[in-house]
Length: 194
Length: 164
Ligand SMILES: Nc1nc2c(ncn2[C@@H]2O[C@H](COP(=O)(O)OP(=O)(O)OP(=O)(O)O)[C@@H](O)[C@H]2O)c(=O)[nH]1
Ligand SMILES: [Mg+2]
Image: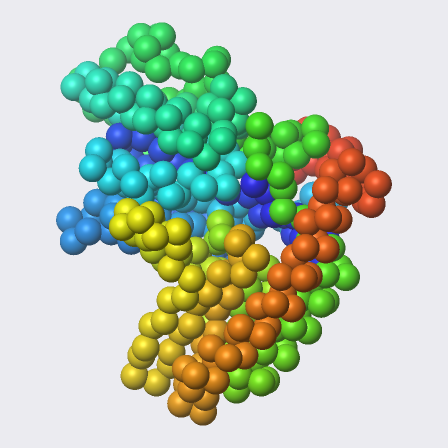
């Protein structure tokens, strides 16, 4: 649900990074935070456990400049990926405009990826959204590791609707901004249609 | 597919700000904020510079969302008020018009009783403004108020945003 403020000439959009535990959602946000100029970002908030697992959410406000005189702001959130945090995941999806699914490329995480996409589909539905129509990008993360599944095979298993797909290494930033741009573009194009 | 966009026009924005200013004054509060349930700030009044308002909005919305979840869990519809008491500053959080969150930050120059009383009164006023906003939003969606500034954005506009 985009928030359009004609008084202050701002549009605010919400992007949620979804995916199984330890797939690299928080790492994506940290990289974006580190590479964004100070004047274009707010504080990054991480509500995490002592072991650095996301407990409730990470939050990063980004100010990307203006379109047609409107300041365009993206609020990035991550969900906690661990299975038992499902109630929190649902809450974060409220009012979402676009989703990035971060998949873990390691062979042993394929089941977890599939399960998490199913969970995303279900939780979106509960908010009245449809994964088939919402702006969406798919990221194959951790491409630097030895035990990765070939990209074609991952695509066959995980692609939902021929969404834009990106190979990434979130720790070094490979593919991170391309993924973000893709979903941001889809959101703005969606706005244009309305 | 998506829930309707949340559209705020100049006129209602001014009314909201006025209502918040009055509330801040009458409640003797440091600052008041009106926040969308999704974590975006709508309007504010008072000593807002001393707070990181974007973080405040997102954390408040998270707090309310978690509390709503708790309420459902024990079979309540919602907890309508949250209050956090600090050493010096206190924070009073309530829901307005089902979709917005009203936050009042105050210290010992005020009191919980006074804040409660003034919030109740201000909520009635805010709800009326929201009603007008919703009506306008619906008419706006049919294109009778503003032509959307986004109907004409181009791929170049979008690329420029990412400094390409
Ligand atoms: N080798 C490698 N490690 C990565 C990559 N991306 C993330 N990691 C590591 O994976 C671990 C988990 O990353 P997080 O970003 O915390 O994972 P998360 O998805 O936020 O996990 P939850 O908060 O539990 O849902 C960290 O140790 C990261 O450094 C990557 O591309 N390659
Ligand atoms: Mg995390």
